[in-house]
Length: 437
Image (cartoon, rainbow, N blue to C red; front, side, top):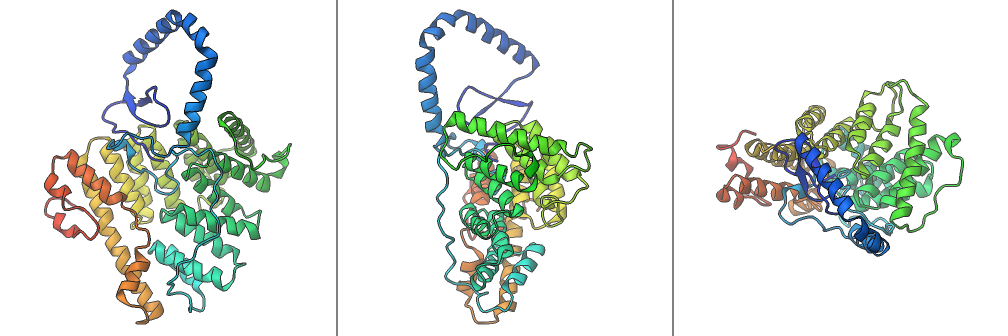
């Protein structure tokens, strides 16, 4: 979930632009004045609107469909363009077509190929909070050894998604479902990744499949067809699936015993239509639930706190978001994504020095994780791989978000001298004299 506008005063509301674009600030008096003005305008323009109604509606829908398919409709240079979620984070791109991802593409160089149990190695790396590119390579080796290893395909998708690589994540999870169409973890993971990539209708249908698998008694009609949908069709599908998830939630009405994965599904659905307060309630319920589920398992809890933080940030509650990110970091201190999001929330409340400190801290953690990854690789393969090969494996498709955001923060601080120092290969320690991290 990105498109976070700088928040310096009160709760934001959207302007009249389409998409999740710029945000404006209004206080209580402004609300009253705005609605009064709207009412006067409605009366004055009623006849003109009637005359143009059909033509305007058709043109508006055509324009909306065009913009929904356009992934680059944010204002250039606007601080609200920051990627707040990374992974289940990018709910602002809306595609009208289903994904055509194709087969999973394996890395050519894989140091885990000759390891006896690469799946076990991958699990260790994930549980220890190690390098995600390295974990993905381990799971790739596992499924290459055994193409029917469903758990390895699911973990491969999980590792790639957390590593900001949604396309290979989707490919891996789709492969898992080919072998096990009722795999709940793969279905929920796919719904999240589809949402990140803007494939809304596909995400809704996947959530419907998840619910039909876990709660078949709630399904009273055939599942939605896998076909391209227009805007109205997607809206109706969203309502249908949301209603089903609400019914599933009502099966356990006592709060603490709610299915946490149902709450996460609802959170995804509400966020997709910008009902942020409801999404916050859902993620909060998943965290509070005493029932066990995938989303609130010990290995996933840091991700759930991060999702809650991002939803709070998008609803203009940056101070609360900072607390949620801090909880994620308490569980996983080297969780770079949460550190980055923490920096973004500081930007949103105008605390640029603190934002720079968090972003620099995230970059410093990157260095630690990279070094740990190299040490782990050396233990696995000894001296069989060169230093340059190790670097390539550790840095596969590395995101530039941290560098780009840090440059913009220094720009906001009027520190062009510091901005010019930022980039891949930068020496983070050079900033320690001016910032605490």
